[in-house]
View 1 (tube, rainbow over the protein chains, first blue to last red):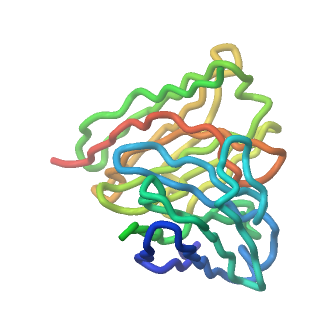
View 2 (view 1 turned 30 degrees about the vertical axis):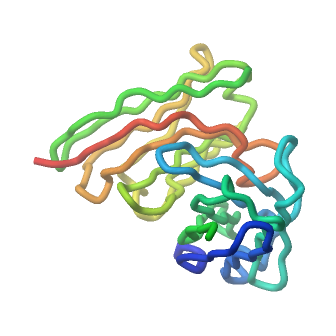
View 3 (view 1 turned 180 degrees about the horizontal axis):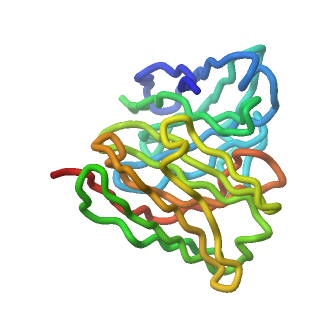
Length: 110
Length: 119
């Protein structure tokens, strides 16, 4: 149950687009379309932003989008805004019927 | 309105035990997949355990054999019994509901309860 690999940090200027990658194996990310993405602000509980690779929950801005290719999933934030500055985590269902989270990415809005 | 409220955290010595509770409202715990997720201070999220609506349970390797997830349908409450606690179990523990008929799409989270394992 090794954590999925994410870049430690990603930054961008307001209005720009950024992409966060999430790399796993064929036993998790590559094997199922059960990849989710979470946003977490300091001291707060995580918030679901994307589920099933590319679906957005009601109320989540369409500036957030998800995709997957092979063992790597990606979260793209377009039109970056100051409020997007937070930690982001991916997660995936695994072949062991467990879940695994990514290592986390700190997004900084310059 | 869906709400999850955790309780039971606190300071415990290494080797000790603690039981966390998560009182749910606005939905039925037994009809959903319910998980515990933890976050050590300054660290990332770590999935701990899940209980399916059918009653099956699964655990992270790091807690298998020491932690037990359960629920009380009459109280609409989720539990996590933690035994043989170690310093590395120190974390904020969140209970969470999986939604969207998916796996891992955790749509509601509690506010978290802090567990500190220290002598």
